[in-house]
Length: 326
Image 1 (tube, rainbow, N blue to C red):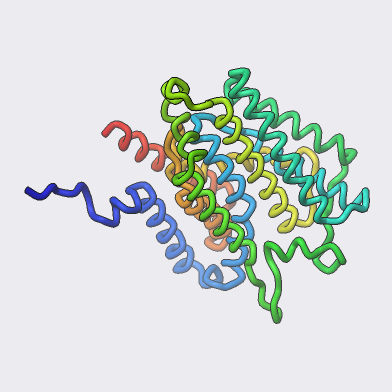
Image 2 (image 1 turned 90 degrees about the vertical axis):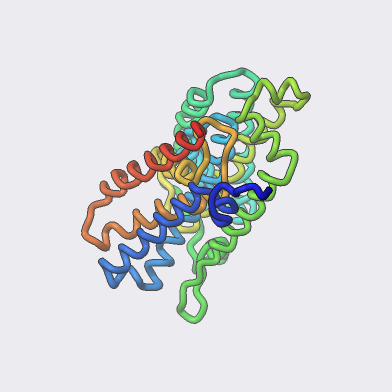
């Protein structure tokens, strides 16, 4: 007797939640395109992609923190802090831009390890630990640069080549080179999360930390590793932000972590831990970026982005709750 499959092959392969948010993304793009002819331009697509780079990197990091059953509230201020430190070394200390980029990522990883240690070793709740780190990074960034804004080398300068890693011009046409790095990151981290021991143990920690410990897994080691990954991608986000915008200012970045965390949750990462999708997170980022870019084209203020994003976020969490109940 043949067993009846639950749902269509497409639903079984991709998942209900990812199909829903993919449909939302398509509907948003279609709606903005119909309501505004200007939205359909190539430059608008480039703008959407440019805004998505740093959010995507932060969101990948946020996904790993959420999968463990935690959260990282220091993503936004951390990104600005690490970018300011790297930029300060390049502009004020005369170091090569490659060194500044490396230091940016290394400092970010160190703070990720710091968060992971506070949470995994000292059992400080993730909300409190990363809230403290958010305050620390906001202050450290300002202290290092003396309260002044930091500008990384401009594209036309000798060391401005780093900006072409994320966007470059060929025969006057803007090419979104950063999207290649985003896709590569999504592919690699999807493999790590789903096909490696590191990823499986991180998921297991979020599913049931105590059972994972009793099964012989070094929970502390892998828990810290998850936050180190979060730090690494926050460092990449800092580089993408520095390459996209003209300057980084002390005291800013607060609130950007909500875009990253919201994107991960919209993409199917469970707030309870144990479940996450890097590809889903990418779709969530594009929904956020499309709202941010598209709403002004239809005459709506940026505040509407928060309202619509909140509604979509509630829907995503609602699907997750119903799925868990079933």
